[in-house]
Length: 259
Image (cartoon, rainbow, N blue to C red; front, side):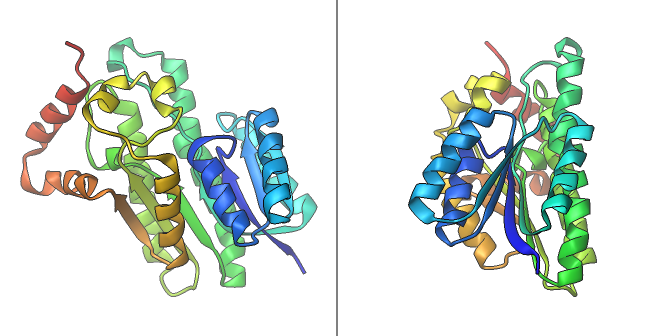
């Protein structure tokens, strides 16, 4: 019989790390994936000492599709059944489109979109065969809005939301659930990579622990499709229903515009 494992990408820090602790606390075995092997091993030691579950780690660069495929190969070799998949890895960039580093943003799409799509596609098949499983795709409230100065990140998160909604409808007769979590700004290394300090000056970020606990709680309830937090972000997510796209685009751009 296949041993059940929870696979979390981007697990070496931030939301992925906090979710790993919550899954382990409930006695889920873990397969943790990120680039930083030292951080993964430190988390493994921490989880081992606290919760006594089996923890496996893999150092992979999700911007490289060949390395993403190696995750699949590793799982097959080990004979794991991934009954929980958390596609958490992702990053952003705050630049005008014409000024951005195109290679950096292609890597952004590889991680935020293609790696998530590949892993979801592969592991969903096994979940459906076993009629058991839950996939959490970490999107963002950014996915509901276009944003000048951060166009590729917002577009990538919109992709995640639409993809998750469509998959959820396709598999609605099964017991497998797919959830897109859409948090507003929260504490993480995201702001340093994306150079998005302006947003954090405007909006007080949530703690990573809070977002992780809310996400995990919603997943345990078996919620499907989309979950937005906090309440202010829910209001932001429905703004396009009440205002013109031109106006929403303008306001989103002003929040990131440097004075």
